[in-house]
Image 1 (cartoon, rainbow, N blue to C red):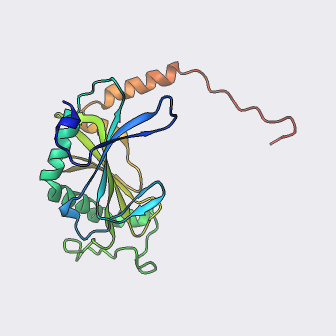
Image 2 (image 1 turned 90 degrees about the vertical axis):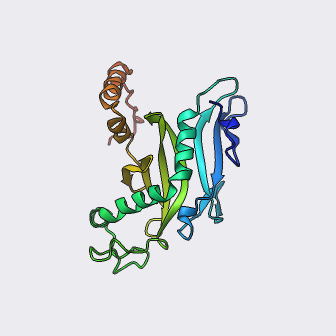
Image 3 (image 1 turned 45 degrees about the horizontal axis):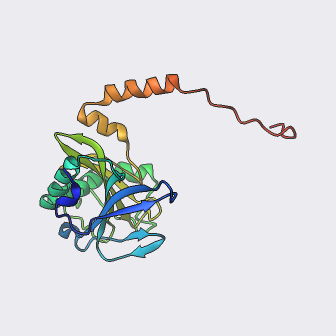
Length: 221
């Protein structure tokens, strides 16, 4: 399936890297009504864009190479049709794990007004709109049932540098953490963990030994 024949608005190919052999990615921007009113902005070339749009990264492409984009297109259509359910699943995952999240990253709402004060009594009704919102969504090449996984990068008020990251498949949250996610959780979810681990160990076994960096003669430590 050709992604450029699927009527996805604002679709473009972005080139970066060396001019002779640039890397290419397929991108778009989208407005998700499910996230209206939430904390939304993104950065492009160091410039802050606060227009309530979310950047979509569909993955790499190359001139003259045919790629089947059907898993990504299916994930895109599912995102549009089920955006409220996906949003609720992401927020529910954050709220349910909030106590452990606070302890792990030393967050204290009593000392920082940018940290939401979510208590067990109000976690089902707490309004997270002022604290969190999507910045961009990347479409993984990894799939399950013919649908690509999505990796969400979200802004949050209490950690503007790292933000939050989540992996979803349809309306399920596979992983959720500060700033980055774990690809091995995708492999565990789609049943390829053992195969991927065997391949990883094989690559490690056959990799050339790492050269130790030789210190200058005048360094003794």
